[in-house]
Structures are given as structure tokens and as C-alpha cells.
Image (tube, rainbow, N blue to C red):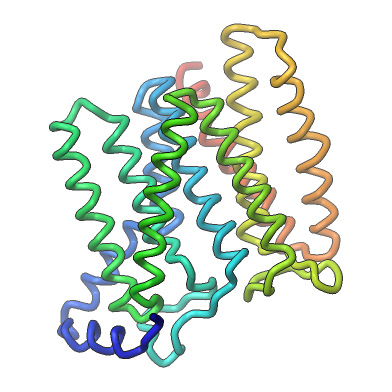
Length: 283
């Protein structure tokens, strides 16, 4: 299932002059690029639809971090890598992320083309990005296939559960991040794990996903309650979770691994900043 021969074959089929193009195309699945796509959707996609799309994007990135922390499968041999990478291999984060993000755009933004046309375009992007990961030598084909399947499954599940409700979509993303990080803490340590005790190692990306999704859920709750105040128990619970559980936990981890704490807090601040931008623009 995980054969270096498939990578060598893929690399032999791509001429050397085309490798810069392959490297450029793979950026379509980079975390920073997917987060940018989600931010643009949030800013310009309308209040509810933009927030819902952003929630799907954050949930997808959290799923990527969580599953990589849980499985902790090493990359193909380093001599096959055409780009630098430090994370684990299974499933492909690029494949999972692109399936969720571009699939979400195809489902939620209905002003361009037909639903089928948008889904076909999203599918083409997912396939192209997946192939670039094999050509670049950082994934086996099974990593990419599993990533696409996982991304599609998550997108279908969340759309059926949330049904367009941003709060529920943000909540699912936060739950995935928390559960995935907890499970990953007791699996094999990833290359960028922070080991707090024997057998307990928190992946830095997974921890950042917890803080980022919790921050998004808390900010959206504040924005919604400011717009239409609701004295509901879940609003209090969400804010208490973010303020009394997540932040102290991050600070505790940061005492052992400052880089992990800094990255996690940075993720929370970045997500909150993205969500407050529309307010700043409107004054």
C-alpha cells in the first residue's frame, strides 16, 4: 500500500522544467492558503454564509492536525522529497484540506455556475493538489486517497449536522480539535510534539487547532449575542470553556514548551483578528 515505486514513477513522468509549476500548484492546499480562502469567504461572503464557510474551513484544518497527531505515520524516505516538510504523512493534509475547503465553497457559494460545475471544479483542484504531493515525494498514493475520503466524509457529516448554522459548525470543529488532540496525546509522538510526561505528547499543530477553533466559537458567540442578545446556557458554557479551560491549558503547556504555547496563542489571536476585521471596517 505504501510503495516508494509509485512516487519514483510519478516523479519520472514529470519533466524537471515542470517542477516549479508542481510546487506552485501544491500551494493551493497549504494551510496558510486555505486559511486565507476561508478568511476571504468570511469577509465577503455575507454574514451567515461567510461565517458558515469559515467554520467549515477551520474544522477542516483542525481535522488535519488531529488525524496527523493520532496516526503519526512517517513520511516517505527523505531522499524522495523535493520540498521540505516536518509533519507526518497519513492522511495527506493537503488532500483533506482541499476536499473540505473547496468542497465547502462549491456548496455554499451558489452565485457562480451550477452546483455540478462548482463541484467538478473543486474535484479537479483536489485531484491536482493530491497528485502534486505524490510527485513532490512527500506522500504515498494511499495518504492522498485517505485524505480525500476523510475530507469528503467530514464535509458531508458537518453539512448534515449544522445545516448552515455557523455556531454548530464552529462547535463541531472545536470538538474535533479537542477529541483529536486528546487521542493524539497517547499515540506515537509526532516530530513536533511537546512531551509533558511519559506517554503523553501534544502535537503543536493539534494544540493550535484547539485554541484556534475555540477562539472562533467564542468570538462568533460574542458577535451573535451582541447582535441579538440571548441568555442561553450554551453561550455561557462556550465562553467559560474558552476562557477557563483552553487558555489555562495552553499556558500550562507553554511552561514546558514555549514554542507550543506561542503557536497556540498565535492561532487564537489570528482567528479572532480575522473575525473582527468586518467590525473594524464598518466602524
